[in-house]
Structures are given as C-alpha cells and as structure tokens.
Image (tube, rainbow, N blue to C red; front, side, top):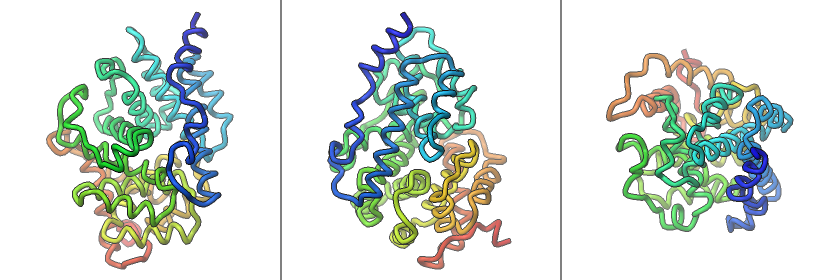
Length: 334
C-alpha cells in the first residue's frame, strides 16, 4: 500500500522532466555549456524529488541519492527534502521530514531547508504547519526555497512583473523579513531564468527596485558558485557587473562554499568562483561563515540570520573598494 501511495504522490507532484528544460521554461537563449549544466541540475532535483515522494526508509533515500555525481548530488537532496515534506504535508502524523533532516540531510542543511520551501509552494498554506521547521537560524531558508520555486515556475509574474504578495499568513509569526528571505531565493532563480548569462542576470536584477537588489545579488552569487555554468571569464564578468553589491555576491559564494564543503561535494567551478568572489579557498570562505555564526543574538525584529549574513558581508566589504578585483576576507588580510 505504501508503494502505491508513493506512486500516487509522484504522479501528482513530480513535474515531467521536460519541465526542467530551458526551452520549456521559456528562459531564452544561452550557451550550450550553460544549458547542459542547468538542465542537469533540474533532472537531478527531480530524481531526488521522486525518491522523497515515494518516501522509502531514510537509509534507502540516502543510498539512492549518494549514487549521483557530486556535482549534482546536493540538488537531489534538495528535491528529496521537497518530496518528504510533501508526504508529511499530506499526512496527519508525518515524521519523514524530521527523520530526513536529522539523518542523511544533516550534512546538507542548506539544501534540505530550501527543499522544504519548494514543498510549501505546492502544499495548501493550511498544511505548512504539518511540516514544522524548528531551526531558528536556518528556517529562513525555507522562504528562500519558496522564492526560487515561484520565480522558476511563475516567471512572468514573479520576475517579469516583479510580483510581491501582501504577506505569508501561514508562516509562523508575521515578520518584516519575510520578503527579503524570498528575494534571496528569487535571486538564485535568476541565475537559471537568464541561462547563467552574467550580463542577462545582472540586467534582470537591475530591473527590480533598488531596495530588493541586495538580496537578489546575494542569491545569484550563491547560485553561480554552487550550480556553475560559466568559465573564468564569465565569473569575472559577473563580479565586475555586481559593482557595489560585491560584498553580497561574496557572502552568497561563502554560503555556497560551506554548503558544498560540509558534505564533501566541492567541485572545480566552486573553487574558481570562491577564488574570484572571495579571494580565498573554499575552506577559508566556509570558515568565515562559521566564525560569523558565533555569538549571534536572539531572533528579534532583525533576525539572527540577517545579522549573520551582514557579518559575512562586512568581512569582505573593505576589499570591495578595489573595483573589479577579487575580494579578500578580512581574516585573510590579517
């Protein structure tokens, strides 16, 4: 019976693989290498989503996901988190998400929390509380994932029209930071929407109102570092285009560095992007995120998560005066 229910969830919630192609999404022309990279990411996400929706034992989910290449394995964990969260959202006593987060997902905390946000986008808002997110710091990543989903699948409205809803009433506790967390996910999605083309991504960000650009640049910096799709010249161009938002790009890259380093999934393009944006190794950038996480204050009107992000940006900000040059973390500068 459980296999049948899992198959029904897959049929209801797993998009056809063709929905991840840039042509089907209408994301416009891009280079062959970029298209291949971004579409491989989409297929890997769907692989994880199907496994999560089937909801086999947690150990089996881990075994199946770990067969994937290290370049895309994190995206499969993101998809699996979406799947188990949907399974719990449709259940009255779901514990799969908790077991997944505390089990194999523990070394993929960024990707799994983002994946839960994808599930929120597909579940009725009345069922969001069936998938509680208890981590007071990382819970904002759920809204990041929600923002990515909306920009990726509802591009004309959320990107073209720059739509922003009045609020997210089903989110536990209405908070003024909600929109900013969503914008960080939209920024990540723009890397895909504009085909990993640095100039098109930058133009897409600049089309948004000024108060939203900081979070959009941060998200796009993270995506360019984690997902890849461009060579050395492309990274340098994106860095140049970021202009005054280079600290945000560096912070996004540092998040990506930590996200890949923790499960041991560091790949060449991540090393290159971190070197370009942060002026350091992946290990050094990840250490900046750890150091700036120490001693964060309790969540109040300004969430600890945003204070954390700002601390990381401040570590890179002094070197941002050297326009067009790779930043260097203040720890490395002494």
